[in-house]
Length: 182
Image 1 (cartoon, rainbow, N blue to C red):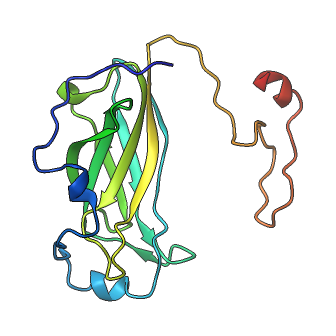
Image 2: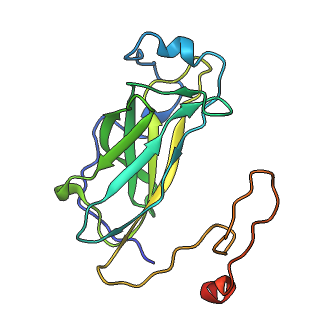
């Protein structure tokens, strides 16, 4: 799939240098956030999204800390960036959202800023750098397809799993799944 250019304006105040940990930190919006995140590591994630060209483009992310998602990033700013022209390597700032009480972000790209057909990297960056000095983020992809295009979505191992194992064993493969992937 090829990338198409879009008419999204770059934020004047957000260049690659602005994403560097050497910049001064903003204060957390909530006073207890710094205490909650003191001895835990980031475990953020964002969903890859497939959208029709003329349909809604909704980006989803979850911002958690700790090995078992023990701490949610609640009520804090997250910058949403997209690489509108991946060949240029420049990130475009779409908006800044505030996380919910469960650490989630749901962002609908406004109609005038929607992206054309293509695959776009998306980065959701926690605005405040934790006391460890690293700037945490979640990465995903937004894939925009023409309406009516046929596609197949399958699991990462190339099969439609009939079961899931948290113990590390191989899942059972559904009959015919390998044929679908081919």
